[in-house]
Length: 491
Image 1 (cartoon, rainbow, N blue to C red):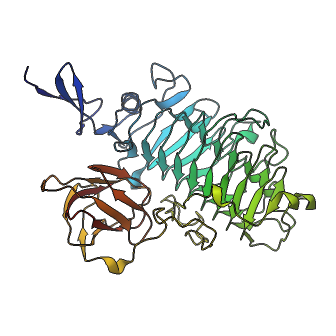
Image 2: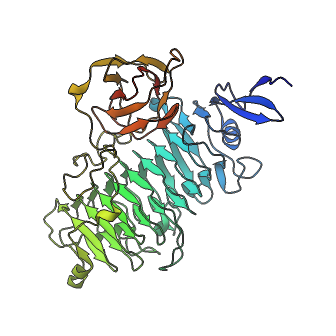
Image 3: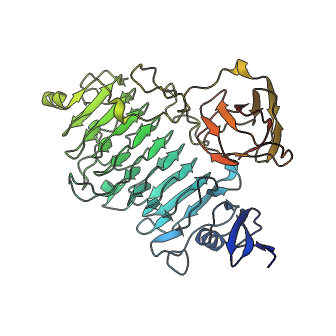
């Protein structure tokens, strides 16, 4: 039987155009799935429930107050929910139509429900706002997702939660404020919650590992800790965030909350953050390590605290602290002198991870987001110096020529030696794609890509690559196989 190609146009809400081939019964099928435009909460719920790898769900101006329940969102606690997954090369994208007109996904009150509940992998969620539910963004068993340039506010409990083995996720350039809005439950209003609460146990409870939060502004009026990292988690990275203590509940709440960061997990990295108590006396210390804590590298942070307050309260070792500074007149490092035995000034290189900044901040903020920090990785000889970690940009003088490409347009590029591609706007938090050329099929580009005026690098070894870890506007492409043709897009 001759093989026949069929093309199905899958249109859950609006036109979609990308192809994924499936073989069945000797036939070759191509499903179509890309741009899905939504204009209402019901349309968005349907798009999320039926999403496929490669879909791009674009939220146009409209009303997005989601109704909970299996018949509406597909999940009883969720206003908006998806259990679908993309892939590393074909993530599912959820975003507003325009950064300048971010759409707000809402619940109906601060006492119940999750605004966005995700149990799938490989999503890119950006340029949206979330408000008015008990919990903001909830990830359960969700991995390799990027949440970027979002605002989460007016939440009954915690704003963003990674739990039930949710690992390798990134939350970047976010703005979180006004949490803990449930009356009498202010002690549960964390900004970012990693892991699962189950009292204070040393056993591994929830391996939600290697999640990163960077470039976020958290506070004011976050009633509990800006970060709560639970027992059983490993490798959480907290970097280049701007944290406000104004509005924290203190010891009058149940549970009490009187620090910026509570650490119960292990191998945590806390670096380049700016923490300011903003004259709130309920903020007793900056970082509290509980008895479940095992190891953290805490360095290059700036603190503005009440002058009599310590930076650390340490119940369990070991805090590896280096090059932290205070902008107030205080000198107290730990709450009690005996706690000095639970810390040292030598970083543990075995738990270090590459820096993922610099970060651009939530784009509607005019100040903040760690702007007083350098925004670059530490110039510390003890830090790992992996040449592929994206922290060392290529010298601009290496460009033989520069090609300008339009934003959100697949563009064929012909290289001339070490060619630079200029996208015209910053790539921080954006998607970047590379394909083999369609116009020139004589060869397939294989080589390196690196940022000239920001950070990020990768080796292209296949016919398609998608990443979201670059910053800057200018990339250099260098072929290692003599092929000068490639197709690129940033969006």
